[in-house]
Length: 434
Image (cartoon, rainbow, N blue to C red; front, side, top):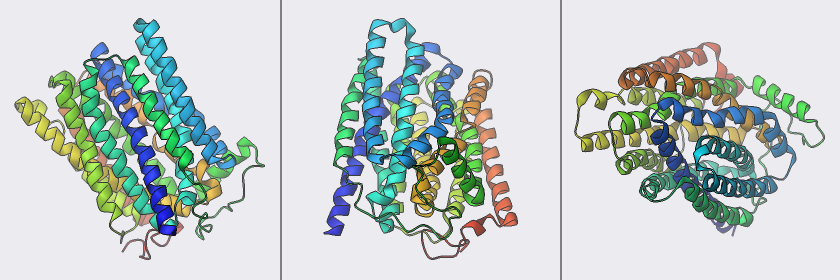
């Protein structure tokens, strides 16, 4: 009976995730193409990519406080309703004042960032009550696969629909998917699993935060993060990687669509390679038990990612036929997708198991914000560079810097014994560096 409840809960969560990711994936893809075609500039597209991290930075203390002191279910429901209202307002504004498309898009992105931060943080903090601890890695891996399946389909369909409808219509279509997601959230049982016993490695007690002020609540989260060097190092390292990966977020669509003149449909196919790789990586991780510490596994993954990034600029120099470019980028995107799952999933599962449940909202929001802190700067810098330099030179440099940063981090972790915060692998019984 317990397994049946867990299975039904998992299906409901995965269905909600699919609907949400499919609708938002189509809209995001369409917005990216729309801005790129309208402005013809990597910097113009890059500015839209800066909105999310900047808004998240401002929201950091508020989201963590709300998630740790309020009902997760209520927060998730409110976020879905807020998203639907924001999409409706954008569709109406775009219909009435199409000439002001750029500020309207920025306004929509601000609303979506706010609601998404509340939704994703509340969901991450809820997983320990939605599912038993021993199935968390499987849930995270399958959730990643379902998200990737939605991302696989959405760019292809989005590229086709983009040729026939306006961005405002895309917003109306996504409202349908957001409401379907809301129905699934309403069906979730948030008391299936008891919160895991407070981790013996946690240095801060998991006392309820409801009586604390917002400032005290936020300060306690900072103290917890400061006292766990491995989590803090993961955040700082992630910030550096996100700064460099901004070159891919800005440069890859710019290189394919503007430089190589790839049609929208073919670009959608190559972009879907990320999702194919993430599906494969998610399914594989759901069936295995890690024998090495999650942080070490993530570092290996980032080294592989750096190696792949050095290759992304090759077609600019090779003058291949269009289908050769499509095959090349599709294949590398599959590899990138697999690697990103290997990087993200073990760390996420580790944090869900180790961080006290009463502090997860604050810590997840802090770690997410710190990790993405340099992304706006990276987007601005690389958007400027791609408008003035050959893309292959920038991508080669980014790949080499990623490899160098990973190597330096490995040396630092060994030298400073940062793993002593968590002396055993929280995903298995193995020693940390086995």
